[in-house]
Image 1 (cartoon, rainbow, N blue to C red):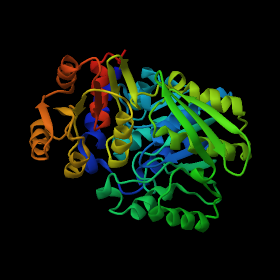
Image 2: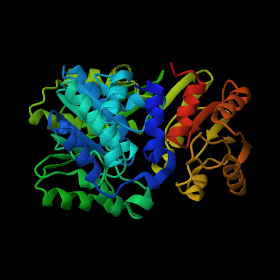
Image 3: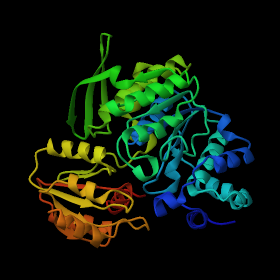
Amino acid sequence: MMTYAETLDYLYTKLPMFTRIGAAALKNDLHNTLALCEALGNPERSFKSIHIAGTNGKGSTSHIMASILQTAGYKTGLYTSPHLLDFRERIRVNGLEIPKENVVHFVANHRDLIERIEPSFFEMTVALAFDHFRNEKVDIAVIETGLGGRLDSTNVITPLLSIITNISYDHQYLLGNTLAEIAGEKAGIIKPGIPVVIGQTRPETENVFIQKAAENHSPLIFAEKTYTPIEHSYQHGLLNIVYSKINESGQVNIVSPLAGNYQLENIATILSSVDVLKTQGINISAEQTIEGIKDVKKQTGLLGRWEVISESPLIICDVAHNEAGLRAVFDQINSIPHDKLHFVYGMVKDKDVEKALSLLPKDAIFYFSQPQLPRALEYETLYELARQKGLKGSSYPTIAEACAAAQSAQGQNDILLVAGSIFVVAEALEHFGMKE
């Protein structure tokens, strides 16, 4: 039997993997996932589920929801992607990563099936997650989509609740060139009669959700029309938020270790979703909701969302990579008094490089680099394009070298930010000693 390392190597080399090679890894239908699930005895039917899609925030929202369910006493599965430091982060039960031997045994036992169906890496991982959740007898699983929703491999479940966090521009070459087209793909997770919570809407997308929900006779809840943050503050790495519920008296006081200001919308989405789950027979108290949010990092191991590596000097890693995500991070950086911003930045090839570079702050000192994967935009190419845009800095062949150079140059009152791609952040976290 293969070792865990050999098993991962087999999966990475045998199966097409979007995070490594891009769109060539994607399949345009659910055929392979349905075939895998049927061969495994349809494990996705053995547990209740919550399905979460969106352009930004779906990872944070998935982890927060899982933490709340754990706090409420439910044995909770959590499936997310991609991983930062270890493949097993994708599949958790009550916060614990799938054991290495389970991954090894699944691949060994189903190698003939894998080689017959020839799934993508993501399709195989979804099947592994569902099989693990069935074997662990989870009460409920929180399932995050990969890309889009309609044709996403996870879209074979019938959940208690669908959640769509927000819609902004990302992966246009796969999902559509307008916000309405992207929303249409994400809305593909809306199922007949199943309630759906929409986190953040825009004029271009609201009618897409209204129409899709009406077609499916699905109760539709807009979180931003239900909970409003009336004040918030950032102190000692924590985000303190006070929400009011529209048309009701009283307030909800939240303390979040996920301290990016963009969590304001995600937590409003969570509060609305918990209200819906209560109507679905899931028992969650107000205290358990508050405690689950406060304990999310401890309970689910979430990394890379406004991740404060050091308070003094301030070092932050954030997986923000598209326009909406980067703007939110820059807004928060600008609210913190500092002298200089040192910015370790890298990208993957299939993003809009011109657009991304136009968003970056002109007064930052840049350390351009690239993650170690085939999809990475070559660091010298990125540096040259950035220089043409008037951005100042240097280039480095690895993220670790870029981080080390930025740390050496950082003054006590400076901020060091690492962002641009989840893969850049993954390698930075390893450099900063976050990997066990």
